[in-house]
Length: 265
Image: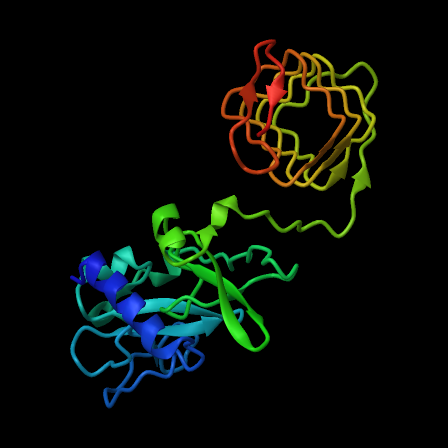
C-alpha cells in the first residue's frame, strides 16, 4: 500500500517540477490497460506517471471528470481511493457499479468564476481535491478539501471555507399556507422567503440552502438540523430560536448570543 506521506511527497515534487499537469491522464505504459466501465481502455493516472512498475493506477473520463477506476497495487489501497483492485476487474468481485459517483461542484475562485481542477492526480472527484484558476496564463492555487493544514501549506485555503456556488437559476416566491407552522424537513432551497413570518414555526431539518431570507421573521422558530448553506440573510430575525447542528450560510454551525438569538459569524 502507498503510505499517505509518500503520496503527499510525490504531489509536492510533481508540482515543483511541472507546475501544471495539463497532460495528466496520459501516463506512460507498455502494459495492456484494463477495460474501464465506459467500455474503453483505461488511461494511466498513476501519480508517478508510469503504469509499468507494478503499483499502477487506472481511470477514465465521466461527465468531463477523470474518475478513478482501479489499482494493481493493493486491494485495500484501491478501495480507499474509491475504486477496485485491478485483478478484480470483470470478475464477481468487481463492485465498481455499486460505487456512487457525483460530479463535483467547483468552488468559486477569486476571479468570480468556477475553479478548475488542478489536483495532481487529475481528478477532483475523490475527496482530496485541489482547485485553482488561471491569471495571465499562469495557474493559481486556491483551495483544497484535503485538510486545512495542507491547503494553507500549499498557499491556499480550505475549500469548505470558500463561498459556495449557488445552483439556483431563479428564486421562486414561497406562498405560506394559512395557519400552518409545521415546516419540518421541508425543502426551501432556492426559494424566496423574504418578508415572510415563520415565528414559532417548526423547521426542524428544513433545507433552506441558497434561499433568500430578507426581512424574514424566524422569532422562536425551531431550527434544529436546518441547513442555511448559501442562503442570503438581510435583516433576518433570529430571536430566541432553537438551534442544534444548524448550519449558517457560510456552512459553519449557528451559535447563540447571550439572549439566545441565532448568530452566524
